[in-house]
Image 1 (cartoon, rainbow, N blue to C red):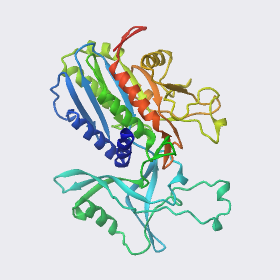
Image 2 (cartoon, helix red, strand yellow):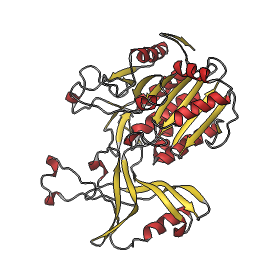
Image 3 (cartoon, helix red, strand yellow):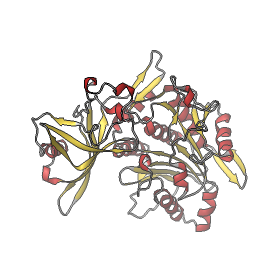
Image 4 (cartoon, rainbow, N blue to C red):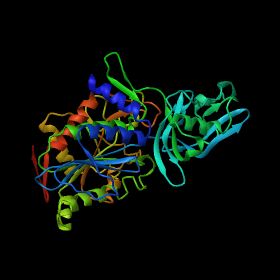
Length: 432
């Protein structure tokens, strides 16, 4: 299936949040979207545009004449991993190790005993000029070795890894010196070591994305949470026909660490972008507030699929499975934005096109995670619904999801963007 092959390429290329945004930007440019830097004046009308912040968050928008409101999808570009500290090289007992700390909440054990590399961005230049450079070392570079079971006989009964002790990757067994690390970076970038000023670098699992199963039922990859939603939202966005409103595709960074950054869902990025669209179109503040009140957001972040070995951990009824459609997520404690109003709107859109969907809720005695919908709503508030693609092994270094759900998600997002959602107080009119 061609779409799955394209998704595999996207996942393998999007090794960090910076690379994921770069891949999205390539797709948008190929589809005729015009880049608008945040620090320049926007002269826009009906048309297709995008902007970005920190090279790790991006917002694209398709402006059509018609009813003035926004229909928005939001997903996130980051995934749990390990980040290198500024001075990462540690000499210890004849080895060189890299000093890392956890970024987000990952399953630590899944990172051990597999080929790893590093990727991210490097700031290069001189005292007068600084440039951002993407880095991905396409080589099996590092490994985090387990302690042999002979020295830890109880490991299979459960073991708490210490990130400062157990999770440091080995860079050399004695042939390299500390300054060889920056020399390696410089060689990869085609510059001199002295031109490296600063860097944001992360560990990357080298295992490639794959379609699995005798009947090709599964997809597996690192970073499925949340790049699967990024990709399916992007395709739904660019493939949608739109003649009535303003469609918005948003990807935020730092969801895995709370979203409280200048490029996160709680930043000014979305509100400032919508406000600037409003001003550039010659609208008033009154027009803006009315448009926001009529707008709707889909928060897209992967959902937990029923685990084949531990069904007891899941709700009795609201337990999505693989390849049965997207999951509409709800939470009484408002970890998700879904309410009866937003659920009814999305279900009606999907039912009209016979697009399958499921529901997800946690067991009432298990506290689940949160996502970016409610966080973005603290900055710019509108009707919103949370969805996700069901997956297994969330926050593992290698995750699993359903192949068919990729197609269902693209159809669902395209239907959302193509439907003109006309909200009039407590009534909604859906027009295709």
